[in-house]
Image 1 (cartoon, rainbow, N blue to C red):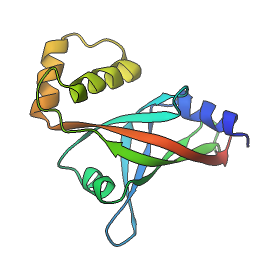
Image 2: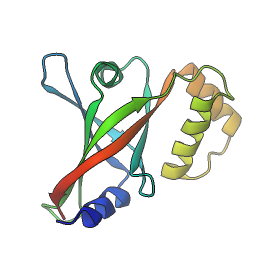
Image 3: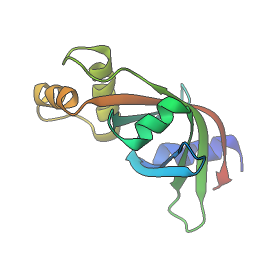
Image 4: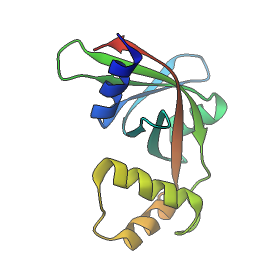
Length: 139
């Protein structure tokens, strides 16, 4: 399949399986909601600082995102280098601004952005940026 077709598949879905590597090398897989920015070839995810996937990606930034298509066997895998921004610390920091952008890309406008910003700090949210290096699959 062409890279363009596979990237189209990445762009049409908002949920997928994020694969990080455990210390012993086995995969750790989490279902995530994501936004794909095709112009930057960048997958953006909101994670929390205290989760296994976050710790695994801090230790080893190799990651993959697996998405399936609407037709039975269609799928795409994006192999990526993970970049974790700082944990949200104040309602107006760069991480919270990125989390707002991620939310908008996935779900549109929030009914109360002040509440959302406070929740991002309280939850210890971290913007995860997956820089796509390779895609493969069947579409």
